[in-house]
Length: 174
Image (cartoon, rainbow, N blue to C red; front, side, top):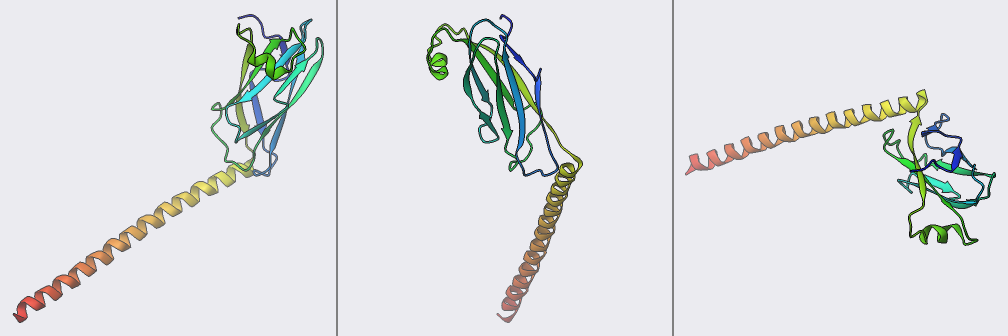
């Protein structure tokens, strides 16, 4: 595979850093520079459209020019594991003036170059505390469920004993 024709401001990964409010969207700007002498069609994709938004997802970069792509993480979702998700940047030499989506769909010879950037999350202390609180709440709920189960078992045993006593009394009367 030949060298990727675009220069990126992010080398091997993308890090979404929290700004203190875990529920707000986290934005990273990806800058792509066309280092070739030909225009390049560019497409950016991600592993989860529920978690990430890309603007613009498809474009054309003229020779020597740059493009800024906004990558947004939906802060309303819980943080996934690091290195689980990634973005892929596809590049294809644009030989015609067709729309970039059409260029990619017509790429029968598979001349597309691509690079993959894995996603990491930098959580501040407030977010980690929230995570710890959630874990503590889960543990408390588990303990509560165990206690409830024990109480139900005790109640069942008591009811069984009462029924046994009633049956014994009925048999004694006969």
